[in-house]
Image 1 (tube, rainbow, N blue to C red):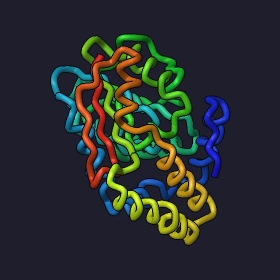
Image 2: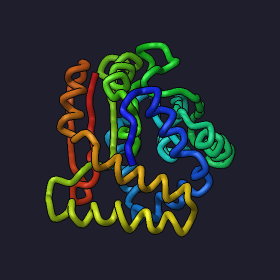
Image 3: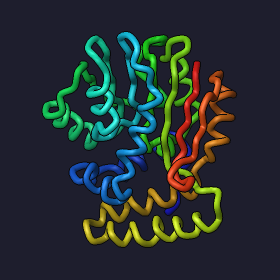
Length: 240
């Protein structure tokens, strides 16, 4: 599978990839990651300091897995905004919004992380959960995140990466290129397509060290980087 690199082409490509999989997305993500996806989200959200009336922007929010976990963990007077390009994913998020009530308001916006329809100096945190690979222009995402964050605001990302250990990578590569797509075929052609994309996006993913370099180029201070779960996932924190 060839993944486009130009902004417009990749945005359209990713939009298509995450259409017709939205209904089963939450459950299957949980199954495919052996329930570790919940652990990874909690590790990212544990970096948030719960002080004052926080405003948090969740980029590429999808069905709202991070968004609603934020709403449950934050206190009254806070605000969570979930943003995603996919109408299909947002339709599920809007249904979840009715069922999964949190402690603070949740707003859902259809837009892309490269062009945020939001004023500057607004949010204390920007989060991206298992989705940074999906953006065509990461520098634009970082630049927009820097713009909308308040001074000392924080950018948090947790995402799949290639493990550094070659033996782990060989096993992991077999898993994502052969096992997961085979399971996807049992569900639907759409899930097979999405899981083939997942494998290829991890194969060509920017390393977390390079991500930190890009964040610094934009103006962030990269304050935390940790590879977890045998190095298949990286947690990054950067401060404005």
